[in-house]
Image (tube, rainbow, N blue to C red):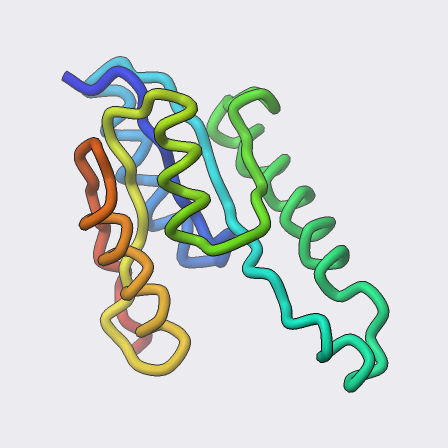
Length: 142
């Protein structure tokens, strides 16, 4: 049914819950997998204000390390691992088009604050995608 799945991940510990679903979908459909993580750009003025020179670079470096581990775990080659900088929804949808994904899988939180923003991202992907989207409800903290 699905030939190419794109996992959109925030690379948090909760990602394992989504990974379990992705692995089952891959087995069931005999699909290939690509992975994308998006680093949101930070406003330029915050560097000088906080005295931080390259926090965005640090975020990208940490994302690369986490992505390599995830790629190894899922047997996904570097050519199918993407770390993007920019608006999350736009970057995920562009990668989905570029790799010709026919299914995007992402996690969705049912909480408040920053988690609500991530839920908004899942919703934006759902409404902007040209392919099917599976949002996996992440378990709430006990």
